Length: 196
Image 1 (cartoon, rainbow, N blue to C red):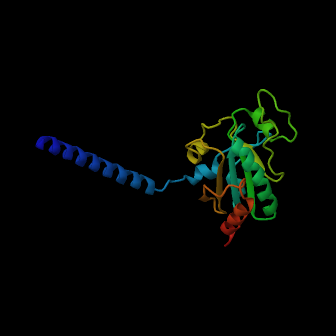
Image 2 (spheres, rainbow, N blue to C red; image 1 turned 45 degrees about the vertical axis):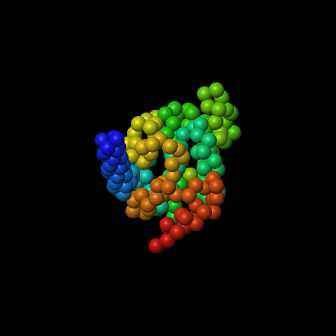
Image 3 (cartoon, rainbow, N blue to C red; image 1 turned 45 degrees about the horizontal axis):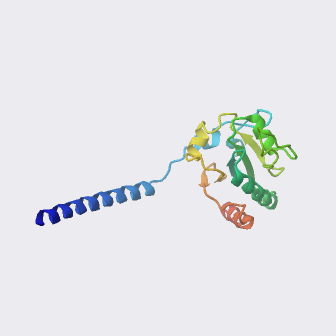
């Protein structure tokens, strides 16, 4: 009985130490700051509907609000609807709104963003993701999830993903309030970040 208790205590002590070490490692991992390479952030080449190259750095001196999404993402559609409200309220501000699709198929992307597009078997979401008329609408040029920007900014492939970038090209927030729930909260958030 005495050996049994000793062995049980050793086992408990061992498990306790392992848990403490694991907890400490987890805390240190969670405290590490994710390093964002701004050259990738600002200079990655996206494509517009006419296959022209566009970089976020083309808009230096302006605040940028980026919505990353894909066709078929229900949450992406509702976020876009909320962003249309936000964009309308802030259309005269020093901010550019971006809609960047990670769709690989250009035809699917174009159908998704086209007003009154008819849903099809290929794209039942056609016409469901129509951004505000002043939004800069881009896609990853067919590379989808396999490009440097998406891998760095959305490593978990969870969409929609919203980003806010300041006038100097620095990422200032990668989890702003979602506009589909309360657009006014996001409007106030953006205004607060744009104050000098």
